[in-house]
Image (tube, rainbow, N blue to C red; front, side):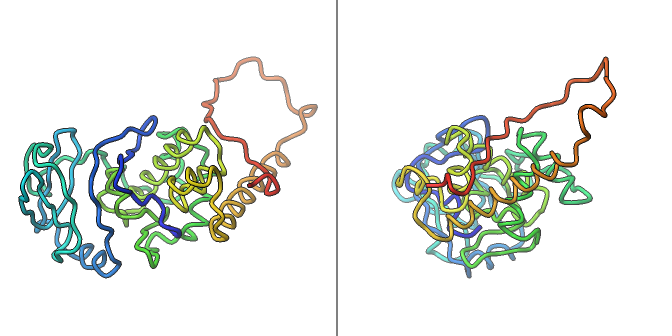
Length: 271
């Protein structure tokens, strides 16, 4: 994802779910792209999992105890690590035997099916998620940005880890994680769609810093592109609906599931 989406600062780590929940304070040193490539190519059987007392897990290559902290090295290099209070670690396990915090959904036959399923689970509009995917990766499940964002919804490694996505190049898992994260951002910014999209692109800290859209040309263009795409889809759907006068009266009908889709502002309303 361009613009450093979801970069985690030295503050509360916000995880997916109904509302943003502070997990723990971790000192993240951001992974360089070369290190990410090396990490993605390592065998899963060579890694270990730190199981935290709050239920979350951190995959790593090796570890070192430094006073009251345990340093978890995320790759074979020494400059890519996470410092965790030793008292917060419940146990260490082999990666292949640790239960995932978020189960990856089963593989789907198409991106449309993945998006539909993820939106049903996270109460989001598929049109919105599809527009984000189009802007992020052009529907390329193997896309990797220069900053290390991965997959259809271009998850940054730290964001994917916080969401419980262990393989961001798995299309179904990527869509599930990205949809969860977008829903979290919408809740965090009171369903202000423009702010949520800006946070997805540039990071929520930047939206809070500027009190709205950050003055980054890339982010402004990104938000406008998605809003324009969603508005176009909705307009097409409305125009394709039959004239109410020509529609027969239906006396009984199953209630349709509604999703809390935020209003789509016009480009001129962005600030």
